Every structure is written in C-alpha cells, then in structure tokens.
Image: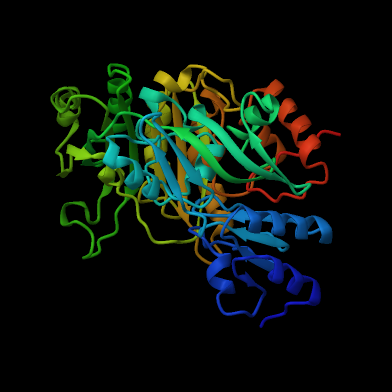
Length: 456
C-alpha cells in the first residue's frame, strides 16, 4: 500500500470502490484524465462506484479540511488538486424511459454510453462533438452539441440532479425542490456540490445528415468568411462549425490533407437528408474540396462529424463568445494561427443562435445567449512552451475583442482569473452564483476548473 495513513485507511474501509494513495498501483491511472498537462496530485483518490462512495469522500474531505475535486470524462482540467479526488468513471449507468423520452445518467457516464443506450428507441441526447466526454460535467457547463441550434443547450433540458453538497448532505434537486440550486447547477459548473446523476430529456432524432468538407486555406483564403456568410442563410436544424489547423506531412494522415493548412467545415443537419444536401451546396464552390465525408448517418455515429482525436494529451485552450465575425478579424485569425504560428494552433469556430438564443422553460445560469459565434484556439503544450502558447492565443483572439460578449467556460481549457470567469455570465447572474456558493460551499472546499468564489 502507498502512503495511506490511519485516517485514510478509515476512508478505504467505508468506501465500496477502490481507494488509492500515492505509490499505490493504479494511483497514476486514476489521477489523470483526457488532459495530461499538470495532472491532479491528490493525497487520496476514491474510485467511486455509487453515491455512497461520493458521500464518504465528501465527508472525509470536510473532516480533514482537504480540497475536493471530481474527475470523469471531461477535457478541461485547469489546475490540479492535492487533496481528495473523486474518480466517477465507474459510475457509468444509464436508464432510459422511452415513453417519457428521458434518461437517468450517472455521474461518470460518457455521451457515447448515453447515445448507445437510447438509440434503440429512436432517441438522442443533446450530446457534444466528442462522444467520449462525460455527460454530466459537459451539461453542468452548458453544453453546445450537434443538435444545439435546434434544441438549445444540454443544460436547458435537465429535469433533476442528485447532488452531494460539501456539508455531506444528499439532495434531489429539481425546479420545485430548490429553485436557486437547480438554476445554478445548470450552467454554473461543478461549484455547488458533487452531482451523482441527472435526469435529462431525449429527442426523436435517430439519424442526421452530417460530416465534414475539407479545404486548403491556401487555395481558399476567404473560407472562414464565406462560412460566416453562409450561416446567415441556414435554418435552426443546421448546426455547424469550422476547425482550422496546419496538418503535418505524416504518413498516417489522409494523403489529401498532409502538409496543408486545412479548414474542416463540420455539419450536422437534423432534418431530411435531401434538404441537408441542398443547404450545403453553396459551400462547395468556396474552393477545391479535398475530402468530403458528408452522408446520412445514424446518431450512434455522430462522433464522425467532428472526428476529433481520442488520445489524451497535454493542451491549453482559450475562448471568446462574439456577436459577430468580421472579415478582417477572420483574416487575421487565419494568419495568426496558421503554419507560421510559434506553436501549432487549432482554431474552432461554432455557429450559435437558434434555440441557443432562447430562454429555456425553466431558467438557468447559462450566460450570453445573445452570442452569435464561439471562437476558440487550442494548442498542444510541450515542455517549456506554456508561455508561448499563452501569447499565441492572446494574439489570435485579439482581433475579436471589439465584438466579444463574454466567454464559454466549457471551451476554456486552462486557468482563468476571477474577472475572466465572471465574464462568462451576466453580472447579476454571477453575483447570484456567488451567493448560492456561499450558502452551499462557504469554505470553498470544492476545487473546480473555473471556481466561483463564495460571496462575502
């Protein structure tokens, strides 16, 4: 056994799942997730198998005055915890009620597990572009997915959350039981307790028309602005994005893309495929299409739309939400994040609006519904590159400052200042979140990616 003291052994005796201390076999496996840059360094890890293990871990953290963090399948680790880490990956159950069109999703379930559980009923969740992400953490931060413009944020369609608050009490949180906490949890992130499961709405989507068109930005230098103009013409059933990055000339990559500055237009249409094909046609003349993966596909294959890499790695990302994209800003972004950038930089643009712009039936803390687009820059980080990555990201996003309305915390992978976190919410909403934080976690026991401080 590793450096497990007598107090930690008492926790191990209470927990049904494994408990790890530094030096134990399995400790390193459980302390890392998808983000490998600066991983957690906890004094103890609880590999929770259910709510009772979460409760035991929270009681232990409170009793020893240790910081407490939760890790499942998310991508956004911002700063490591050195106290207690709850790994929820073993809590992966999904229960479906096809008549009610709802699913109960346990804390560590990935969207892939949810998608596969609900697909036999012709239903789909409001999952993200990468099915390997944890469903709960994604939803607590808002959640902009492949059906976003048609149905809104994932957080808009949560019916119930089971929660363990830092005072080691279990709650079933609904709009009726605790309106303030229900409001805060949906969009305010993991700042108010440890969610052990949630009940969500499902939607009658069995198939989509989706995939990507790949272009060379050297051959189509105005592509980002052409996509922007096209987004003004499409209905809410069309959700789209663009990813741009320099592809290295490596043999395992698709031959047409090697050694080029590639723009990948990603499309998900929740309607008849023939309508989707018609809507996409204006994009094809932008430039020579190097690769075309558009097709009708079952929602179980929805991860193929973005086709994002599935291997954990070290990276940082920053984001802005904007009310418009100007041609000049997009041209400057293409240059700043292109092959001449000091570090490899991946640009991500997402078209918002539609149902995302409308208030849900039950209000929540999701901020900046008026944003028209999301702009993100992401870079892998090797030893000694952190500062140059920060500078590259600042320079790449600088042209958008005049149109910025805030930021999305779900697309920000790295630490932020309190003012930067505040900018993700309306001012009155942020103040309300701090008051709710003070009520449920006055001593800031919870260590979250983007912490909201308790009001003083």
